[in-house]
Length: 438
Ligand SMILES: Cc1cc2nc3c(=O)[nH]c(=O)nc-3n(C[C@H](O)[C@H](O)[C@H](O)COP(=O)(O)OP(=O)(O)OC[C@H]3O[C@@H](n4cnc5c(N)ncnc54)[C@H](O)[C@@H]3O)c2cc1C
Image 1: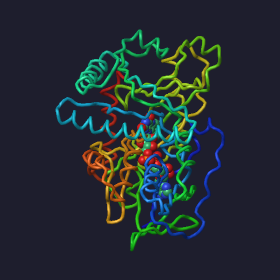
Image 2: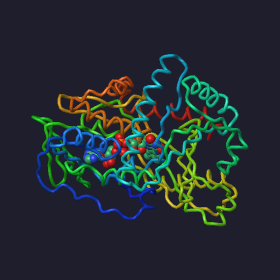
Image 3: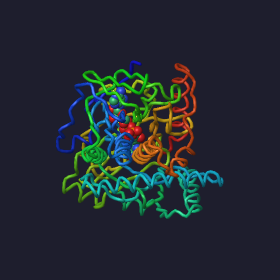
């Protein structure tokens, strides 16, 4: 089967641009055999390969990555490892589902924290917590107040913050109120992903710049790259929104582009005017209309805004330029005391959503398992689904596999072009309905 749509590295990732250059692993340039093949070296693929290596220390695992481990969405996100669902729900069933979700997310955070500590991964990992903020009174009453009640119902600690207190913490008067929760971790995601790739166990061979361009499922799996091939009896597929290219979850995966910018670091005079010392992270009451923001340990401000349906997984430089100007405008609106701070990097990443919010996880063929479709919270969901897919494939009795399966499977969406019209219309309505949060 020919793989018709490959990811593209547009070299715009700001998180890796601010790190020292990294020597990538060589591309596959011969025909090899392995006991396992993992495709995709984002959070899911790195976790899956590592867990296979732990479960089967005598097996050889080949990990193929189209570009470089830190250059896909896993190295381009906003750097929040989030332990809570965005909304809990209020029925008993929803509360149970939330507890199950939190158990999975926290297991992922604990695994990543172990890796950061054990391998001394220098990625600014800090359990800073986060502010879930509303920009309007309507957002506060419609989203934050019910969310606070739901968190209290499941015994989760939170601090309610009104405008003035919030303004002291964030250095911006833009927000009406926020819920602070302590469990979220902030980090540089490119540094974390690089560190995970560099510390893989010795029985994993990672090949970068090795896109799978053809795959054959006869008598095992044979994956062709431009200059080599891998044969393995078993496969774990970790390519997020491109799993349909490999024959799985066809007509169920929605690929969206998401954009973020990082300012240059504030200088001493600007820091004095800004008046905030500690780094922070903020998620918006409405994930699509609102803006995710961070103040990083190296004194930059991140703006994550603009998500749109983009099945082609491509974004033009011209479109990105327009988005960069909009990010600057939003920055100026929120931080008028910092008028000369420029956006140093603006980048695009691609996320995968399903219509019902369910992940593409589990056994998808006799010898193939999937850890895909992380619904935009892949730091934790990708990590745990990769680990659990490996446990499932090795027959390890892990009770969290049932928890993961209870999140469901991506539902079918209408075929294109009806899909494009429907998704764009639904999305436009969502943005319009929540414009008070923009
Ligand atoms: C701007 C932005 C902000 C975000 N913020 C957050 C956040 O703060 N917290 C959070 O949890 N999530 C966030 N996300 C989402 C998160 O980044 C993703 O959910 C997560 O990276 C998915 O991980 P993954 O391993 O499943 O997929 P990916 O990271 O997409 O990795 C899949 C890999 O498969 C490779 N691949 C694809 N096709 C092939 C092929 N044919 N051959 C070989 N390799 C292939 C790709 O190159 C890629 O490296 C954000 C995303 C974006 C873009």
